[in-house]
Length: 560
Ligand code: ADP
Ligand code: MG
Image 1 (cartoon, helix red, strand yellow):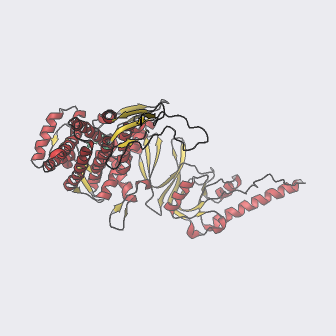
Image 2 (image 1 turned 180 degrees about the vertical axis):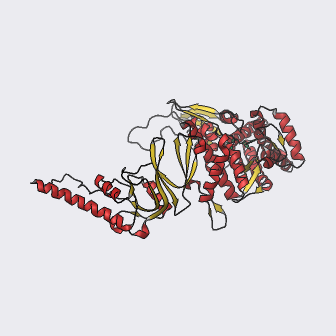
Image 3 (image 1 turned 90 degrees about the vertical axis):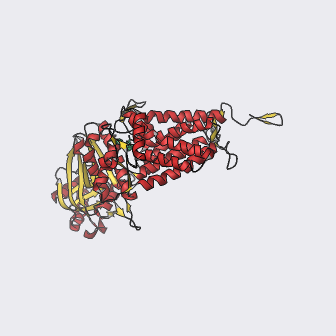
C-alpha cells in the first residue's frame, strides 16, 4: 500500500506478496545457488548421474545439466532464470550447460560477498560485464585453430563432450558417426566459412540391439512398411514417384444415391472403377517409376496392380517426410498423375524395407542429395536410447561449433584457470571497486577446475595450487585428467579439447543471468486468480512493471 496525502491507496491486489531491497536480492541469490548446487556433482566425466522421476513415475537417468534442469519442476522466479541459462547455453552451442549454471551460481555467491561490503549492485554488474568481455578476449587469444579437415581434433572434442555421459564407452564410434554426419550436411557459405545446420541431421531411435548398432544412414528412414506383401522389398536404382493425392477412386463427399436397378449395373459400376484405377497405375508405369510414396491412401485393387508390375509402394507418409524426401531425392511432389514426367521423379540408389525389432521401416539410401542423413540410434532399453540421443546431440553441436568457429581450447579446467590468471592482471589496471568486481569474476571461474577436482574425489586446494603453478610457468592448457587424477601440462596432448565457442557462451550466459538477478530489488508475486470468463488478457494477478524507475533504476520482476 502506498500513502497519498494520508489516504491509503491500494496498489496491489489482495494476496499479493512483495519482497523488497536486500531481502529480495538475498532470496533470489539463495534460490539461484540451490539450482547451481543441484547440478554441481554432475560436472565432468567422473560426475554423478541423476535419476529423475516425474509425477507419472517416468524415469530419466542422465548426467546432462540441461536435461536435469528441464525435468525438475522449478517454481522460484530466480531459479527459473538459472534454468534459462542452461537453455540458452544448449540452444546456442549445445554443450557446457552444467558449466554455465555452476558459473552463474558462483558469480552470484561472490557478488553477495561484494554486496556485504556495501558495493552497489550496478557497480558489480558493470564490473562483471567488463570482466566477461575481457575473458572472452583472453579465451580467443589462447585458442588453437581447428578446421573441418582436422579429423583428430574433431574426434577428440566429440569424445571429450561424450566422456561425461552414461554412454561414454561407445564414445569413439559415436564420435565418428557424428563427424561423418556433420561433414555430409556442412556447406560453405558465401564468406568462405562453413555452416553446419544440425537440424539437417535427422535422429531416429529404436530400442533393441546395442549402442554399437547405431548407424549413420545417408538418406531417409520412413517408419512405414511396404503397403502390400506382394510388392518387392528392395529396389535398386529407384525412380521414386512422390504423390500427394490418394491412389483411390474419389468417393463423393456428400451422401449421393446411386440408382442401381439391375445386377449388370453393379458389375458395370465396378468395372468402371477398376478401369480408372488401371489407368492410374498405367500412368505410373509409363513414367518409369518403380517406387511410389504416397501421402494418402492406396486402394487395395491399386496395390494389387502395382504389385503385379513390380512397383513398390508406401502409403500415408507424413507431409513433413514427403518434403524431406523431395529434397533428398530431387523429386517433385505431384498432386495429379497427369503431370508426372520421368525427369521429375526422385532418385535413390536403394530403397529397402528392413525389420527393426517388431517394426518394418523403409530406408531410402544413396539419395541424389548426399546432404540428407539420419542417425539411427539403437540401444538395450528406452532409457539408454534416450541418453545416447542426448550424447549425440551434444557431440553434433560440438563438432558443428568447431567447424563453424574454427577454434578450440584444452579442457579439464585449463581455460578457466588461465582466464582467471590473466583477468586478475587486468583487474590490477583498474583500481577501485571495479577492480574488486573483476577479481571476484576471476575467482568465480576457478569453480570449474575446483568442481572437477572435487567430483574426481581429489583435494581441490592441492590441485588448484599445482595447476596455478603450471600456468604461471606458461602452460596455458595445464589441467588435470579426471580419469587418472594426474596433472597434465597440456590437455590438448591427451585429446581433452573443447570448442572455444562453448567456453565463450558459458561466460556470456552466466554473466547475463547474474546481472539480471542482481538488478532485481523488488519481487512482486501476484496470487494467481482464475480469469473471469470472457475477459481475455485481463490482469490475472500480473503486477509487472512496478520497479524500474528510469534507466538507472532497478528492474522490477513480474511474477512468472
Ligand atoms: P557441461 O554440461 O558443462 O558440458 P560436463 O559434465 O559435460 O558438463 O563436463 C564438462 C567438463 O568436463 C569440461 O570442463 C571438460 O573439459 C571436462 N572434462 C571432460 N573430460 C575430462 C577429463 N578426462 N579430465 C578432466 N576434465 C574433463
Ligand atoms: Mg558436456
